[in-house]
Image (cartoon, rainbow, N blue to C red):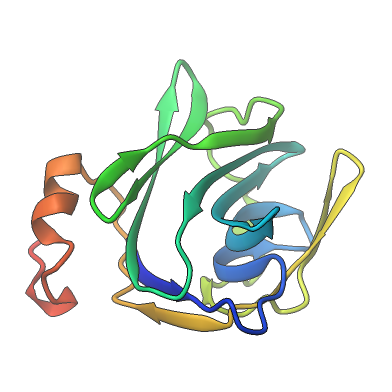
Length: 169
């Protein structure tokens, strides 16, 4: 859950909002923003043991908005859902080869993998023959929160305007 303001001036493709990704083992998660035909999207890419999932939801630019990303398991496969400004939005699956609901590659623990906010660290990933080269985030990011449990729609609506230090969860 975070507040984001994506700047249109000087926009570059595939700006990393946050990532927990190990390039050496090609496993982890990357949240990034991109533009397609004048529309802007927040994307979630998850890669694990050769399987991947890429979902996106349309967002606004040049204004703050609250983004909540939930990753859940449906019928043994990972699913991504988005709440933007407290409203459920329909996401679009870019491609998926069924990311199975299992633990991420153990090498993520063995190799020093860090949660990084706003920095691409020259990350490049190839999936189904398409290369994704990432850039640093150029905009504003505020009140970044990570929850290990899925936040309900009601929780997000009731807490999105509260200061990060006032949270109980």
